[in-house]
Image: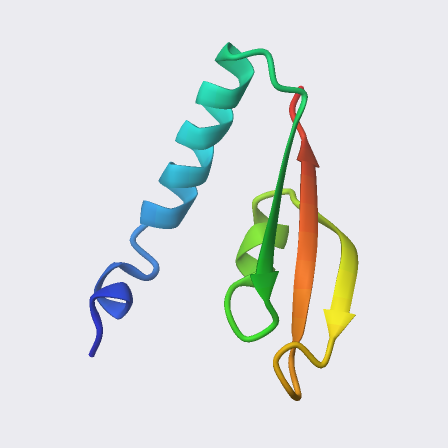
Length: 73
């Protein structure tokens, strides 16, 4: 079991996203963008309110790189 599996489901990732959004708003940012791989965490980011706006297929082979954005209100 890796260290990541020890905190999965404990709210750590969601807390980090919320804190990132709080800091970004304080700095006057209007949006956050990120990229992840199809085998990593696209479902997690979608649950956090991010919208996929692009994808590069075959990078790496059999997978894709996915790009997300979230508007801050």
